[in-house]
Image 1 (spheres, one colour):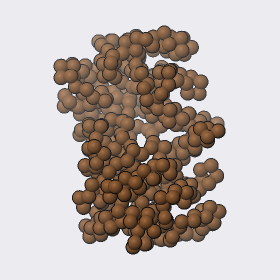
Image 2: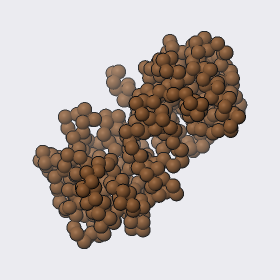
Image 3: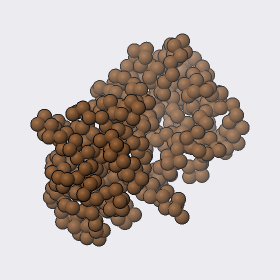
Image 4: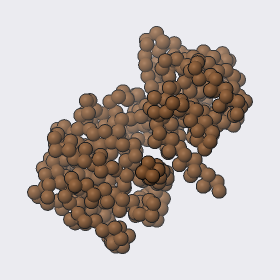
Length: 232
Length: 232
C-alpha cells in the first residue's frame, strides 16, 4: 500500500443553491463523485482510497454512488468534520500507517485527468510535496474593502488545484502542527509550507475545475462534450 | 459625448492556435468582436466607441464585423501597437477631448452584461476609477521557479476583468507617466494605481471571460447556451 488517496466529499454545497449536495449532482447522468472515484480507480499509481463524507450523506453515498458505481480501491469511508481541513485530517488518520504518499483530491473535481494525477504523484515521489496549479491568466489585485492595494506580478501567481500529493509523514506532521496552532487554511499544501517544507508546482489544467456553482456545472458539461468530440 | 469606450481588439491570438484572429472567431455564428460591440451599442450609458485593430485586420474588420453588424456608436477605428498597452494609448489619443469617462474593455470579452458595464461606469462616476473583478475562488500561491514561496490570503485576492472605467483626465495622466517610464503592465488600472489614484472594485461575473484559448471558446458557447435556456 504505497500511494493512498484521500477524497474529501463532505461539503454542504451551499454555493450550488441545490437541495442535493454538489458531489451527488449528475454530469452526463453520473454523480460527480462517481466520476472522480473512477479516475483514481483507473490509475495504476493509486493503491487505495479513503473517502470522507458527512455522516448524513452515508446513505446517499451507498445508494447513488458506491452501489451503482463500485469503487474497487476503496479502503474506508470516514466522517467529515466542520471544515474541509477537519475532513482531510479524519481521512489522514484512516490511511494505512505504512503508506509512502498521500494524495488529497477534492471529490468535486471530477474532470482531473489520469495523466495529471500521475504527474503530481511522480513529482511528490521526487520532491516530497507537489500540487497541481495553473498560472493566473488575469491580472491579480490585492484589495482591502474593495479598494485595490496592489497589482501582483502576474508571472509569480498560480491558482492551486488538487491533486496535492505529499510524503505521508510530512503531511501527518503538518496536520499535527496545525491542530496545535488552530490554523485554518484553504488547501493542504499551505500546512506543509508552514512547517518549512518545499512544495513543487505541477502544471494543472483549466479543465480540472472544482464544481461548486451552477455555472461550474454548465462548464463541466461543456468540457465533457468537448472531450467526446475529440474522441469521435 | 460624456462616456467613450476604447475596445482594444488588435491581438494576434497566438494562444488560440488558429489562423483567424480570435476576435473574428464565431460564437453562435457571430464574430466575437461583434458580440462585444453590440453590448456597448445597446447600453444608454455609452456615447461613443473607439475601436483599436491591427492595420492588417482592417479589411477583415469591415467585411466580417462592421459590414454585417453595423456599430452605430463607432467614432473611429485606430491602429493597434505592439503591446495591448500601446493599443489602448492609441485609442485614448482618439477619444474626444471633452469626454468625462473612458471605458476600456477587451474586444474578446463578448459575454459582458450591460448591467455589469453600467455598474462599473456608475462606480467610476463616483470614485474616479473602477474595474470589474471577481474574488479568487482557488487558493492562490506565489511561486518562483515552480516552488511555492507563499500562500496569499485568499480573501484579499481578486482577479481583474474589464470593463475598467476611469475619469478621462486621470487615465490620460496615467498613460503620460507610463510612456515616460516605459512601464509595461497587464491592465490599465495598474497605471492608474501607479500615480496614486484609488481604484474601486465592482463585482464582476465568472461568465465575463476573456476568450483567448480553444477551451475558452467551448466555455463561451456553453455560457450562451445556458443563457438561451434561461430565456426559453
